[in-house]
Image 1 (cartoon, rainbow, N blue to C red):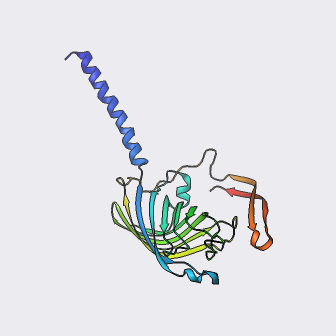
Image 2 (spheres, rainbow, N blue to C red):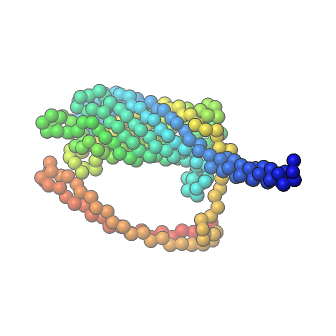
Length: 268
């Protein structure tokens, strides 16, 4: 083989090796760590108003979650103990009542670790998103449903769970959850819906575990940040909203809020 062809072949092999190494390193360092999770809830509706006792029932709810285990790629992941972040779809028939209909909710969540010890975890999940309820109050066709006055509502989820790793790719979790639906009185009536439940979940890792998952990275400081410095942050803002009080006063009121905050931070 001519010398020129040999040199060209060697150069090509070296380039392929150099290209492959960064790609492999990138995969190991920034791997997906995605978890596909199915969760079954069983609970009831809290009758926090006398008029809601007619809806007393126990019913199941189902969740499909897509989560991601963090390991310190971003600074906030390290500061909050490497939580699980993700998005959830929640569905329930709300007791199979013709007045209540069904509820569909989508909300992003953060699952904060409280205790983490090898295969065992105790977590607290907080989620906030939107819900669509198929039924709402109507003074003619659904006058008994005084809990919610609109189809679109805020969905708030709080959950405490115990999670255990069964295998390198499988997790199981047992939790206590509270789901809340409300429109913030943008449309009355708005007693809100609260459904506590107990739940069981199984999660499957979609790809091989990131090699840095067990090591946990400690990110470097932000740009221009170094130990011993102080900073003062000043935040100001304003919000506007409206509240429907037609049942009490026959009109809707606008609400305005102005706020300011000053913080001093010491980096150590």
